[in-house]
Length: 115
Image 1 (cartoon, rainbow, N blue to C red):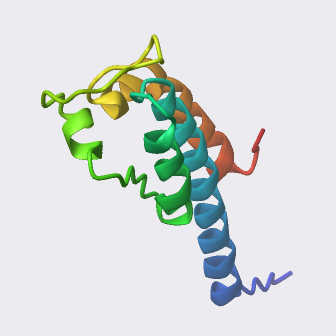
Image 2 (cartoon, rainbow, N blue to C red):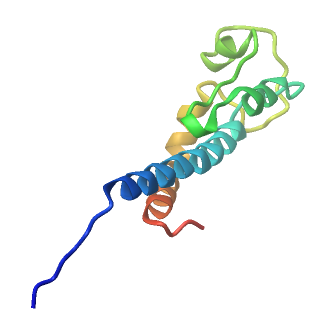
Image 3 (cartoon, rainbow, N blue to C red):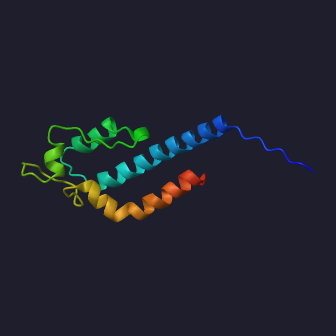
């Protein structure tokens, strides 16, 4: 008995692209929140800028203030910090603390088992 299998390539590509785009957006939002745990904070403007300017669907996290670069690289500036976890290179610190969880979440999102 012959078996005929048809494969709709366009539907498959569309579904994969949608899954990946959704996964990137959701994972980027989580990574941004984790990075902001270690972000320097005085008035909240630096963290707020990341919420406004980041392009989560594209996987781009952006802190856009005139002093963001100086704060990230710990170039001496006058800055009062109210976040006890704040540090320079806050994204690297977040990665060191949360990378395994990010990888597990990505596997769940791509595999279709999103939390």
